[in-house]
Image (cartoon, rainbow, N blue to C red):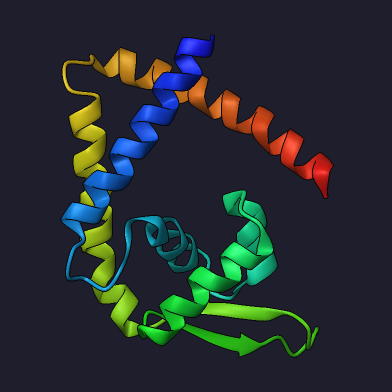
Length: 143
């Protein structure tokens, strides 16, 4: 299992380098793509909900969303129900950049699963989803 986790880490680092290269000049960094995708899929998500969904600490979520706000990809709004909460919304600039981000992610998936059958891809997806569910239980228990 140790080799498996090492391999996951290597794939993750390679994915980061791939995204950085493919997104150069877009104004979105490789590590920001997960924020972009989550905010676009969940307009009005709170910064706290975002940090929980992405398994990142609140300060990282605040820093990355702040950079996305500065770059014009995200808009922040105060939550009328809870003034301490900040809600995040995609801007038109983010919506226009979304196809590029999604295509870069799709291209990476195709690259790393090259030679896999559809059944192998489905099994891989199912097994990794179980791993994420286990990780999520751990992360929820920390809060």
